[in-house]
Image (cartoon, rainbow over all chains, first blue to last red; front, side):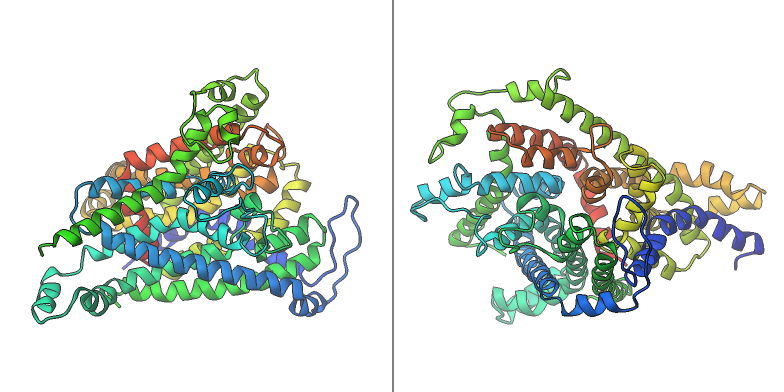
Length: 297
Length: 279
């Protein structure tokens, strides 16, 4: 039981953290919410602000450009996180096998994680470069393409190329989580299944995968939350182009704010995006809590 | 279980593919940074540079050079920003973590903290921008320090709490019985025991701050506060004819986090795994 002094202390110890977070997150969030009901614009001289009710939302919800941006964000998120999941599990299974160089390889795969996001974007932009890029040269020399291509300059390939760069940077996190989980799979269980005649694939599907599903789900929901916010890599690699083919929700709102200077309208898009994020964050909370409670599935 | 020869071959083949996929892009970035400019515009590429050219690194480290000035000021700003934010975040996080661990502050509150930084920064950016603008705080390192400290705080509290949880509570209780204040107990009893955890938290926090781009992009606009990620985006967006210059900046910005990550591999991986899985 906590005494009265200790109860007071509980809040005093928390106060600085609550103050900083309120200042940098809660107040701006409330402010964005308020802005979303107004027709505010970013101007050099102050102009009167009008409360316009739900007008911005009515427009935002029927705006085909915003819907397209949301759809692209969804595509980016699902494909990126999906590939990271598959690749992460595959890498973890490999790194869980005994082989010479296993420890070196385990150490090596932390490098993509350590590369700053912007450096990752810049490096892949150089690799994809249409005239002198390494990807073109490599595929040409392997005989896989006969002409150099503009990988991120072509709307049909740009998004997938950005996704590849993102997957390269982020698969290590999933792999490390999966590897840590794999190391807790009881060997006896696998041996028993093998004796009963279950093949490797069957053992993986009915023992290993369910065993690691819990932690894997948590890290993938976390990655989903992050991928849904995607901005940096888009900004550097494509600036939302070509022909808007990589313009995701965050980038869309960024332009609404800082290119078109429509802060009221931009705020309404931001609130909608925040709403979707909130749902994802609640999903994270629920899977993380279940995981912490000790469930393995 | 014994593997057949074929299975072993398969394992080594997969390992090779993974190694090439992981190291390839980085290796190429490093090669580009020391290749002769003409080697980089060959069609198709020769891959192996005809001669090594380290002049770009020389230029980057030379204040008298234009790109050197841009790089070095960004490096200084990044170190100050990430370092300052890490220090403030820890200073604020440790008492909060203690409150969650030993004073039974609600876990729902801790989750609410985490939720605030999981939100897309785009939802906070405009009010922050307006506020900093009217306070004359745009383009200042201190502004980024404060924003980054807030961004690092929830994760730092969370990591520190998990670590304080496993410290023996008896010494603390004894100290409190003897009439020591909580502040004293925290400083003299908890901190020394939690030192490794503090170091791990500081390192992860520093790396996250080092990586941040979005707030820095919006809040800074010249050499006095621009951080490395923003400077690199500038380098890449500018009309540079020598791709090796961009590559060399990329290599330089990657070295500190890469060295930390390799040197403190165990620390970092276990922190990452715990941080992303436990709730």
